[in-house]
Image (tube, rainbow, N blue to C red; front, side, top):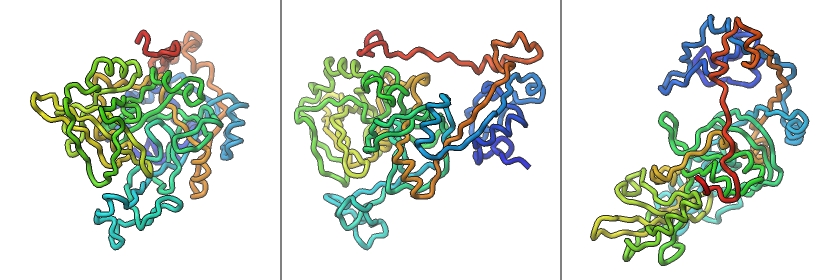
Length: 423
């Protein structure tokens, strides 16, 4: 007879915000520490601490005074300002198909034959070619935490986040102006142990509010896994231009051991910029794990594709080093091909990062497809017994889990215009 099955049937279906009033009246709301995270598949419902005895001494008690659902962007912004509280945002998530136009070397690719089933019409108002090659499984967000509206969106389910603010002036990399600031639960970086194949990044709320510079932001949220943030050290030829779409190109680098990427001056400059310099190969089908790599330049081409050119250094005496340019790849695929060496891979500060940006334009484009994006506004009151500060007044209740679930947020590491100073 229950409307929610997440906890009882080991499924991720449900999890709706609307369940909170039901949970408050039914199975009790426990502190987070009652269920330590179990890093093993099939362990979502493993929670030995959630017992009847624990329920009897659980101090958490909440009353839902008012509940409303908002859809219009102006109503959502008004509620943020008037009620001064975070709200729950639920949205359709999408998988993207990007399109590579059949031009240059790609015209020789069998997929570009108009008779091929992989020859696809290009998106309207884009490439004026006979056909495009579709590249699927793209994310509807980039590695800076900006959500994306795209012609090739296909629904793949839903996701809930916390909406904490908005900025009408911020402009995304895709050119969308204005949107909501969200706190997300996702990890930053490339592929955690149990996670699926993703490449993600995020920022601080101050970054989205544009109260600090992008350089200052790197002290807390360096997003080291993002190829856009890798240090560029150009060789003797400067920016490498390539029109190769079919495969990687290589050029021998003379006197490689003297290349500027290997100098102390460049190493110190990369450190001062909080930008990874030395890269390692993750995908041996595309690069050599035994060699060191350094970014020359990263050039945006077409539909969210990028051409990455690198200095591939072989330190073996007498060996040959090269400048290498990969064919156009999505940024997430580049991030799964190379990553900074461990000593230069800085983690994002979880106390300050984890915020995403959801453009108003994405909301409107999803509405055009019949997809929902709603915000749930809950006015709740936590009973006095819920607070550890009142533990002495309720000696029959156990506050150990409340205390174990209470965290201290560290101060922002930015203390001035030069965040590297004192690091």
